[in-house]
Length: 220
Image 1: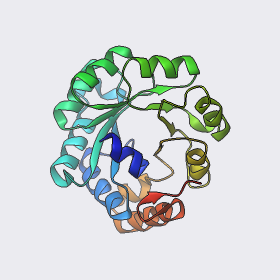
Image 2: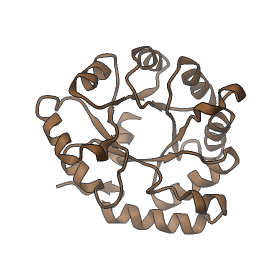
Image 3: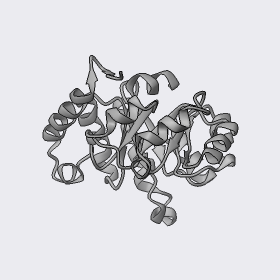
């Protein structure tokens, strides 16, 4: 799984997508060349057992298991971690550094991508067992920040998430990002809600082709 992240480089973020449309959305992304998807937890659904996220992950796994690698995003608690694991998530992504969540995810065999912003947080996350560390929000600091971090912290794989789009994606990769998390700039919620998945696939293909070649991201 770690190697797949390094090879595919792009994780599509499904935020605010209805549970019954997650599998169709993932299928459209897969047809466009995206093999990694993150279904984010809606923190307002705590009273409903986080139905949208759990069902969204489960539906994608059932339809595309073996083709699409599915993870859970905005994992803030051990409860959410276990729900994601039970639903079939293979990796977890967080906006923060919670060492308990990181360690438990590792114990369960999940790939971990906690969010951090400062060098101290990056080191804390990696020291707790993170496989990748997500710099969030990446657009607030830009590619130069990744270059600066990669000097003393070049042994830590960094992900760029937050404000990443087709205009700056390659710049983040050239600066040393191991991968990218892309949400609203890639997953058009209007097209999803209207069921226009063929159009979405066409957009994703164009997006991927502008920064990829033969399934691999172009980095110089």
